[in-house]
Length: 272
Ligand SMILES: Nc1ncnc2c1ncn2[C@@H]1O[C@H](COP(=O)(O)OP(=O)(O)O)[C@@H](O)[C@H]1O
Ligand SMILES: [Mg+2]
Image (cartoon, rainbow, N blue to C red; front, side, top):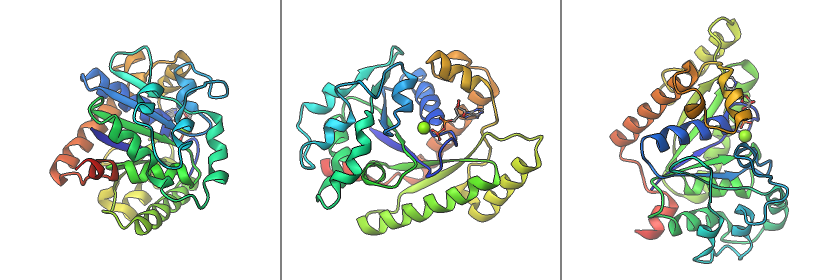
């Protein structure tokens, strides 16, 4: 199992789109993929036609057992998406109440790692969608992940969000004393006709060098179409330039991780 988290403390930068599109591409390659929604807004859950306000069995249930995860629970929460090889572990809006209730409860940071350890043989890839806020959900996600993708919109305001995300990452990693989590910054919604896009891309490359993916995901209206249709863009419009860019991103990340020998996350260590 490979576990990638997609996070940025700014909203509307393409996190959910990245999760769905990469998930669709991996599924198309025959990988068994689990998309996990840890955003109380439940955009990923809604994407596949479920209502995070009314769903009964969701990621919220994982956090109701004092940090332990009953062995048969994760499997009961996984739902089909209607697309081959692509499953969903949905969110509930009740996830928003966790932050308040979990303060000071120890062991709460490893709930998702424990969950994935229990699903270890069922999936080849897990992609975790996150909310913009730093809290128990994001901490769980970063602890479980072997790689972090940070989508950053190519505009100036978004660069601040990136700095905040990297600061958070540092803080969380320091408190967990684990291996530093490898990350890839993914420039998104790139519009080569605008100076703002070009300049902010250059600023990202200047400040973060090799951590920035060498290309960018272009603005492509097909992503919005795909989301209204409830289909991964890779299914709705496999040849569109946005999907082609995600295909290249996927290949690049996999090459990079193979070369680096991805470190084991907490979930993997637990099993080792
Ligand atoms: N590359 C892109 N080009 C055009 N629209 C995009 C692109 N990526 C995402 N979008 C659209 O932008 C909006 C926000 O994207 P989303 O993935 O939901 O962001 P986040 O999860 O970070 O809040 C959605 O309507 C989505 O369809
Ligand atoms: Mg989202």
